[in-house]
Length: 199
Image (tube, rainbow, N blue to C red; front, top):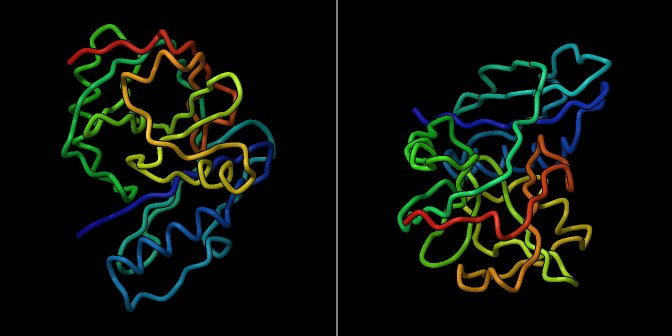
């Protein structure tokens, strides 16, 4: 049976972006199980630590929320990305099955993470959405592998603009940012020349 996850940042006792996570969870449930009732995350939250950054991981499926854990979070540094081509990969829903992503990640060589290129367009790293800065605007791929909750928030605020970004357009950009529910905007940033094709 399909199982999916929401990973939510808890920052000094504050559970972040719950509305975005709840919407994505219920959209996923409606897609796979159209008759499933909407769930509200507030009814499933455990005791929340009052200090530090924690990862709240919620596993759910057809019958509702199955597992909730809250663990301390440590940011994994990323200073380089291997450009990996994978035209047929599909991770449109945040599934517990990451085997395809893990196989691509294993090909990164000496680099810290991968940036997946699908049908000549940049998408995501193994764990994060991306944005690239052209000197005036931050662009994020119009067709990512996964439409992240932090991405949705940044788009709603007008901080990001969606755009198809081809690998050959990389010289037009100076900076790359990685972000997701656990990685705040601006927390992981690297020069665009730290992206290396390994096709």
